[in-house]
Length: 260
Image (cartoon, rainbow, N blue to C red; front, side, top):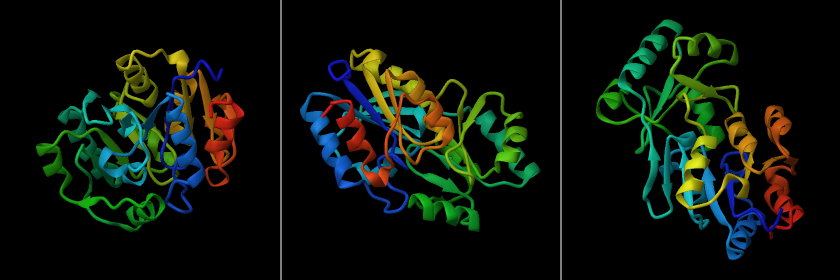
């Protein structure tokens, strides 16, 4: 296996970055540097926008899958793939917000926007250490492409709301909100595009994740690793479960598979 892997994808929140410290453990930084010294490509695969990957920007990587695959680019900024929501779908989201009484964060390639900082939005800020910009979502939708939605929906309500959005698919990595993307957009599809761009095959890929939005990627790569702090759904599809992000999970797994 160690001679087969040529690219490794890393999620950010709960995988590279600890929810406890809001930082990347020193062991993970060193492990990734050792990977690259061995000629293995390193990619970030996150639900975050590129502008909110600052917490890992001092780690040298080869490219980024952002907003769960809607916007993919090289480390130098060359766009590999992008797909934004049709405005008709976004207008339907406005109607659903009024009908069901929930808030949504709108993610463009510039920032995250929300209509107000409510108690639930503040709780999300405290968890991921990202502050959305307060703005009128209707103005944002009219002036910028939107690549991902983060509605503050309970797990109980999400199925009912998503039934009105057949063009979309949702994934969840916490109980407060979910990530909503266009159907056919996910980290696995994006990984295929990135690997093809670099002339690599999926059977040469490995990935680390912890949340529901990592399931497609962990299933698709040749070697999928779930963090010890991962959700049970991800652990069930992973090839290997390492220790938690706070217990040197990335370093331990890479050493276990003799990749570093």
